Length: 185
Image (cartoon, rainbow, N blue to C red; front, side, top):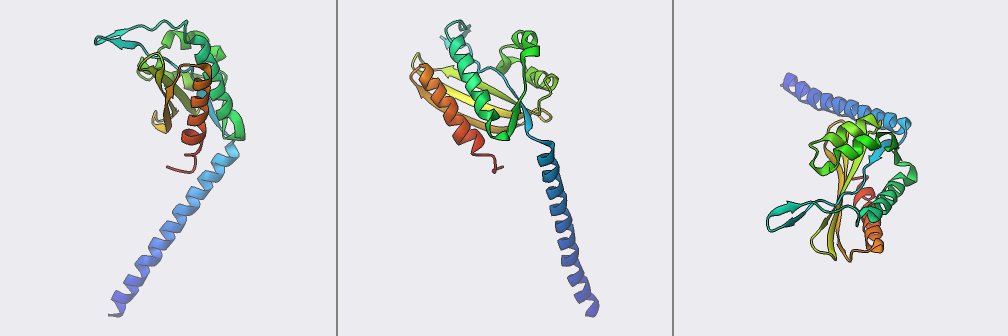
């Protein structure tokens, strides 16, 4: 009877020791990440995919949306770069490769290679899908470059195809869907 009791007491102590070791390892990993600085983030231009009419994909002329895309992408990069969480990397040196790879939402993971070349830990992709001229859906995703898995995802419906509505949508997604999820898994 004494043997059983001591074995039963020894098992929980071993479990506590293993749990404590796991907690210390996790803490050390978090400290190492904090000391390494902010994660490097590649913010790719938002994309407006081809439109579907009568079951066929028709290329959307980019000229109409380009100023709005550039403005919204710059705001997205600015907002994500604030606060020290992320360091936005410069994609300028990869401009030719980036242009050749577009649309990124159809390139089968080429965005990962571009982000790696830029030295990024994470990448940001965004789509603005047009249901009509005044009803759009904006979705933005942050992905881990090493694994390719999504880290944060956010989206909203835009009612009104104006500069102001695009900017409000970017700000809403960053504040309420991307940044607010930081402490959650």
